[in-house]
Image (cartoon, rainbow over all chains, first blue to last red; front, top):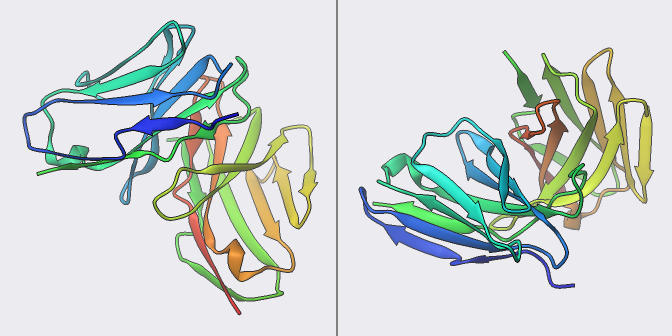
Length: 113
Length: 111
């Protein structure tokens, strides 16, 4: 099976812009979670979608949003970008509701100037 | 407040030795705990999961222990190799349904 894919891999934006990142989970996986990774804060949970519904949410401002499509592909959007949003954004998919094993994609490296 | 703490300093060991990484947590009662490996510029890769009612789990050269009284997990790599050099992350699943990660410990195995 193909692994989790994320596009784009690298992105440069300026403050105030918005960005949309995409994640395609492993075939058959219905749960997709998004994480932000920075040197200072480590890996932080953004949100999780299961069968097109947001099932869980981390402590991020409303500028961070996501959605999931019927084919389980997911997108996350960050509006009004800030310098502090520069990070590696990772998505992970799991096959079951228990989410015991997360399969991560390679991430999207976002740089906000 | 809830915290997960891993050795903040990098761990440097000689090839062939056993590497031991620590994960401590406070104010959590996790149903299970996981360990991941992350190489630079790549996403984490799942290694092992240990449940709250398990004391120890092994997979090849890897061993994980889980002490819910001490609120601690230890991750061991025996007969370490330079290819084991990476950052190792512990993560626990809280009752809120979120996977919470530690900051990670960078392991460097010298030949």
